[in-house]
Image 1 (tube, helix red, strand yellow):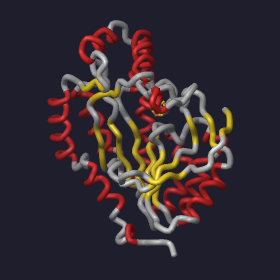
Image 2: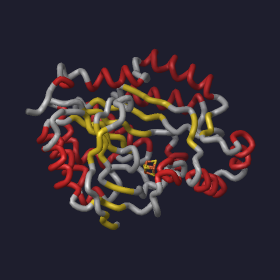
Image 3: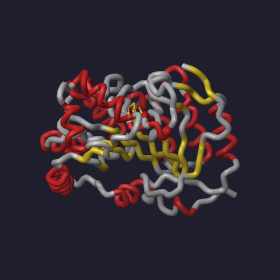
Length: 294
Ligand code: SF4
């Protein structure tokens, strides 16, 4: 673990299409969760030694002064480039500290994680949820804990993530699943998709946002293929044959998976279109979007 310098931590998003977030926040750089397909390893992001986690120096005082100076409230998203609940968070409590500041200044929050460590902050999330939008998305790619431990070696098992979802939803927090990536020839099965939908419903999840494929970008692709060689011999060849040097590998079964997915989401009342998800959590706080700080 090292500390790195940062001048800003909260940045304005270019659009709020992604879960309605108005701002982005990354307190940590890198991630030690070890997912074999992680897109953040792509060369375009230029993060050296990605598996090694680094925390931004003075993160909380920077966040405080940034939020203090903002004139407009909004939802702050975290978890797209690094998991805010890496194991080191248990000791440093920087994500918790940031949530407390977010709560003090009246902002909402959208968190994406693969860890049940988020439960340590349930009290702060409940506090924010009293007056501002809160959404917690658990990235879940497979229902099968054994497969999960192979492709996501250092995160909470899928069953633990579902358990955490259950706990958050029973406390009134809007929560659901990011069903991505779906790895061709590995977890792109109807059984996997249906099991995840059923379990989400059972655990009080309100949405599932899917992507039936995996990105295959320079830097990330090589890492992913090397891991495939260790874990699933002969699958690399199938990827090369099917996708060559394409930017993404969409499952050959994506059309039928989509149909199954939509049918079962309708059956269970699970939201899956982004505008519906945003509307359901962000604008349920009447006129929140019109509030400004004076
Ligand atoms: S938890 Fe997210 S950021 Fe961390 S390795 Fe896995 S995919 Fe990458």
